[in-house]
Amino acid sequence: MLGPVILAASRSDRMRRLISAAPVTKQVVDRFIPGETVDEIVPIIRDLSDRGLELTMDVVGEDITRPEQAAAARDAYLALIDRLKELELGTRAEMSVKLSMFGQALEGGHELALANVRPVVEAAAAIGTTVTLDAEDHTTLDSMLAIHEELRKDFPQTGCVIQAYLFRTEADARRLAESGSRVRLVKGAYKEPAEVAYQQKHEIDKAYVRILKILMEGAGYPMIGSHDPRLISIAQELARTAGRKLDEYEFQMLYGIRSDEHLRLAAEGHRMRVYTAYGTDWYGYFMRRLAEKPANLRFFARSMLTR
Ligand code: FAD
Image (cartoon, rainbow, N blue to C red; front, side, top):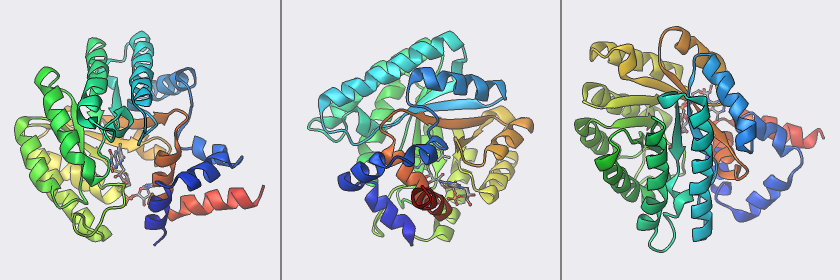
């Protein structure tokens, strides 16, 4: 019940100001967003990589309101890629981007987001790695998928994310699987209306399995973005049935969530990529993590009260 309320708060400027200013917030935020600057995040990247994990890096930020912010987002990713070049990790450290941070919601936003994200994809390719376009709320998806298709003409390894809770996703998955794309499948983290999305957990889980089967049987590269133990073992089974080798799909989880499982899957020989977010504009990302698990909210509230 709390999830939808927190997701509504994740889009409220008033709540953003209130929560971002609370002194205790930082300690709780650090669990999910372990740095604010490139200098702070580089040791984390090294550490995860030394433990046999791969990474997808997210500079936090979304829903920007001015074109200068979109240019700043592009530059933040370019600065990160400059540092990744020194680490020589290749595809072991890729980038995840939210197009709303690249100007997608502004006037002429589709073209603006494409113009801002292209140099990031180019710079990533120049150091031998890739970019994945995150999925945001359903109103942005046609634009995201069109940008993905456009980028793939020059950079076929560009990935995208699809969300199992949306009714449209089975059809999107079929098209992407046929075209041989890298695709991350997630359950979906936004507050979506019943006209476009399943609302019940069991319906979303069933859709996830149907869609994953399409991806595993297709020509692309499936990326299983979930912490759900049941879905992870189903994914292993589906990969086996589809005859996929261990390097023909990968698991992805978020930094700070089920970290033991990251290591367990990597130790079993799986490709395990940790979605690692950093930066100062963490509010939206953090609130979605609270919404996913009520225990996180209780912990957050307790820290506030016991100060
Ligand atoms: P759940 O059933 O929610 O969780 C399974 C178990 O995982 C829980 O019982 C709990 O033990 C643990 N868990 C899950 N979430 C949390 C949490 N926040 N805190 C603590 N424990 C938790 N969504 C999008 O809409 N667009 C994206 O682009 C996107 N990218 C993602 C990238 C990755 C790598 C991952 C892993 C998720 C991404 N998501 C994205 C979020 C996703 O949609 C889900 O909201 C999120 O993963 C929770 O769903 P679950 O599959 O882990 O299953």
